[in-house]
Image (cartoon, rainbow, N blue to C red; front, side, top):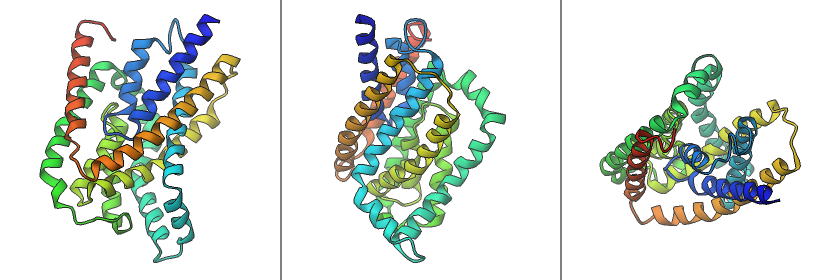
Length: 284
């Protein structure tokens, strides 16, 4: 019984981490890898690596559901205006265009990137370096581009801007720890989007991108789950959903009035700390 309670507690922790980090520019994958190592969610005294991969997919869907709930009115409005010239048509066409670069990476993934990323990039040092490099780039991009925005509404994002943001998103795919949210928001700044619009476009882009990726993983999964594993999935999903619901709302209120350099400084601090811990073999 003690082991079950302990593993469910770990599931809660992982759900909290996912809910906090998925849409903030600090890298959810990087934090999940590190927290997994620190608390032993998977491995010898935890769940299998196969179940952990499924767990991460499920709690990502919990975070995505939070976006759908928060933006339900705008999503419904977009679905009602799907005819050419309407808000919905332009938004979803732009999102499809933005997904093209990631789609190409996804097609090549199994043949070119999968083994390389798994072997070399899903490790503390590369993740730490991604946090540091991303922080430096975020500081520069915010100083250089944030005040030069010309696009102040989500409906004004052009197809050219959407495609460019999609290209930036690919950086997070090939370099674990860089952060999909950070790369797309930085891309938005460079392409002239205001911070709230860049963040909203990043959120909306996450809906089809993550549902497609997560759906594919769920369909191909053939794990036979125990009662504890099913309970962990439910707990992680619910916790991730609730935490993301709170965090995203607070984040949007924050960036409307304040700069994002605080997130960059956080990334720098965490990245440097993790490099030190990896050097002294505290994490591997």
